[in-house]
Amino acid sequence: MRIEINLSRGEKARIFGPASLQVHTGRVVLLGAELAKGDSVRIADSRSYTLKSEGDSLVEVVLEGYGRIEAPRDEEEPIDEWIYIADTILDECDKPCVITVIGPVDAGKTSFSALVSNRALSRNVLPAIVDADIGQADIGPPGFISLGMPDTWITWLRELEPVAMRFIGSIEPGPVAGRILASVTSLVNEGLLRGAGVVIIDTDGWVSGWSAVEYKLDLVRLVKASHVVVMGDIDLYRFVERSVSSKVYYARSPLVYAERDVSDRRRLRSENYQKYIGGESREVDLTKVSIHGSCLLSGSMVSDESIYRISREALKSDIITITRYPGGLCILVDSDEQPDTQTIKSLQRKLGNETIVIHRGGMTNILAALSGPDGNDYPALLESVDLDSMKALFKTRYTGPVVRVIFGRIRLTPEYREEGVRRLWI
Image: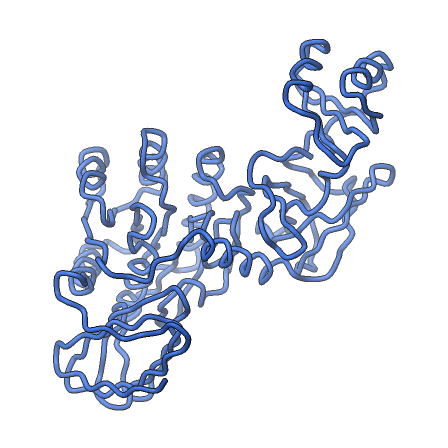
């Protein structure tokens, strides 16, 4: 459906995707970016944005599917406040500066991060955006922290291509908070080295509970954030303001927005996995690279027959191999299914060591990363491992030299859907 909307000065229109728009006359502001005659924007499904006219303007909107247009009430739409906060922070910044954006799920963190980037560009300040939301990543694939360097205005972080990535290997921040903190700090420094005058960190929505709050406060301190913006949670704002030396701002969340349910989030993650992983199969010689995240492939071979015998009897399965790592044993069983937890605990008591059991059927379709000599991590999917030759087959788009292989916690189906996101062992 094609619709023309006439907007007078200060008038607003909220557009829900999927839709596209083009400015025919006048000038409008969208996420802090000023759009003039001829400028066009694509609004994806599950996204919504509010236009504000700076004068008499004519905008053509093409609605698709469930796309629609609304006239927002002032109390619903905080876009003017967002622009004021972003401009105030940029005025205060002793460049370069670092801004951390935190808040619960669907609070508007990603949109606000894009807005700050757009306002920076309007001042000829080069922005960098660190996408630190491993569960709903936009700049890179899920399970990665990614750095984007916008050189023009954006409406969604998915419009950016990552210039650097760090592999986390999980979509749940709690178990890997330390790895996230190190990776975000690394990419903030990378953005500054690339000449950014402002680095914006878009974080995940885990903010409830002591562990979550401590993790966010640690992040603010480690990156030496000059400013923190707390979205949509006034209690969180008050707590953070008392806890850090950074200047802290509170930004309201929109009362009306395009909501994403669990299935939408899974679909978006699946699309991003496929975008970044769906390449050719590539063989990697594991004897020539360092290995991170695998007790089996990094451990030393165990030759003690008594350990094999006890393991076979307890697990009621043939044993392919056993390796030793500091403080424990890693056992690969010749089975397509994982032994139950109680059986593994019983075996652990008999062996007197921490014991990790892996089944042969679980050594495929694991999200991984191939690290290059440039320090970047590139998405890959483990297809198979030959333990005799110590060669592994990965599906990946990366074709450069490999210095390290990192294995993650996520198993994907052939359709790039998450089959398991809890702790995986290999």
